[in-house]
Structure formats: C-alpha cells, structure tokens
Length: 88
Image (cartoon, one colour):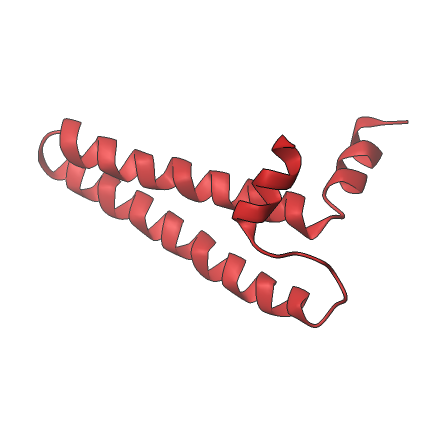
C-alpha cells in the first residue's frame, strides 16, 4: 500500500480533515502572535497581518466545509469531541 493511498484513506474521514485544519489555524494564530510581538517594524506588522489573514481564510474554508458535511450522515460532533475520541 503506497503512502498516497494511506493518506487518502485517513483523510476520507471528515474528523481527520477537521483536526488538520484546526491545527493549521492554531499554527497560523501562534505565528501571528509571535511575529506581532517579536518582529520589529513594518516587517512584523506585515507578517502578523499575513498570518491573521491565513488563519481567517482557513476558518472560512473550515466553515464552508462543515456546511457541506452537515448534509451527509457523518457522525461528526465537533473538533473537541474528535480529539476526545482519539485520546480515549
């Protein structure tokens, strides 16, 4: 079984895709905070705004993706329950 087929099987579940999207949003937000606090001048401001825009774009994409998933019979109850299910 190739790596591509294993990844496509894992990402077939909406919960896995949601976890990845939320992790990327967290990384983007942390990048915004770090660049806003620790990078001086206009470069820090532009970097912070870019990270915020990236995070907002992912948030919109996740919201639209969730609306499409709501029409299916998937048992997705949110990212927090998805994390709890994977921890147990």
